[in-house]
Amino acid sequence: MNYSQIKKFLNYLKIKKYHPVNYKKCEICNCKKTKEITLKSSWGNNKWGVLPVHCCVNCGFIFQNPRFDKHVYQEYYNNAYRNITLESIKPPKTFLDDQKKRGELLFKFIKKYIPKKGSMLDVGCSAGMMLLPFLRNGWKCSGNDPVESHIEYGRNKYQLSLEAIQAEDMVLKKNSLDLIIIMGSLEHVYDMNIVMEKCEKAIKKNGILVLEARGNPLGYTKNYFNLSHHRYFYENTMQLTMRKYGWEPFLTTTYPITGDSRENTQFCIGKYKGNNIKKTFKSLIKNGKRETYLDMFYKFKYFNYRAKNIKHLIAKIGK
Image 1 (spheres, rainbow, N blue to C red):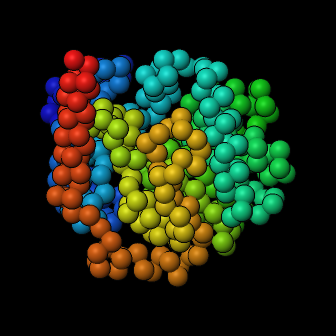
Image 2: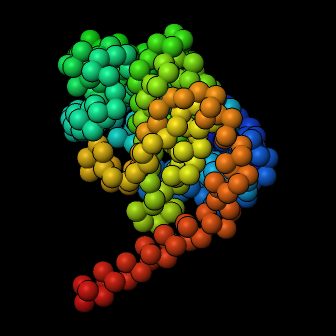
């Protein structure tokens, strides 16, 4: 990104101060070599602009590159994020109702994997509605999110134990949690490795981690890559992320665990086993648990091809 491209993007976010960008290493395997998948991404509100996404040539991880410093993202999430994604700073009723429903379905699905009672954390909890069924069943629950208005709603309306902070700033007690859920939030954080390190220190042995992330594009990839998602997980990279921090994945699926309101999501659930899992992480990539740049390049090329052909088919049927 050159100076004028950076200024245009920052102006869109209503950030007056200039911030440079820096190229990043792969957040999963630490490889320095990346290749561009797309130059332009969605800025929201039917606007697209320069915001490159790269692929790691070692493991196939997809992420925004280059990146701004954390202050840009803090200002964005504090002032603009919900206005762009939900057109409102306050949580709309439809959004809150959906969170409640998703929480009910999640609890029903994972209760066979977790203790009857315990301590849990929701990283990127928004208003915290997904915690409600766990609270009703005797769980000690907490959550965090950078959007203050949503945190205030959960605190004031339901007296939830929520913090308005960036996930990287979490202060968690060691070996204190039986369950951590990160439901579509790991894509948003500034530094996913800091977040995962803190989660690992806080989890108990055999504690459960639930990751949710966007799945395959539903249409043209120009709408899929967007300013809010700094990285894009797939089955392989979700599992590698878990293994890097000691969780053994036992279920990775696109089955709609939390219902159909987020139809292109995928899930990975793992049990914490510690160093026995972590020590196999690098050898897994070396021995083939990876995607190549061409794998990922043609993956997205396929979705653009399919979207184009579906559009033509609909037009033909309409005639």
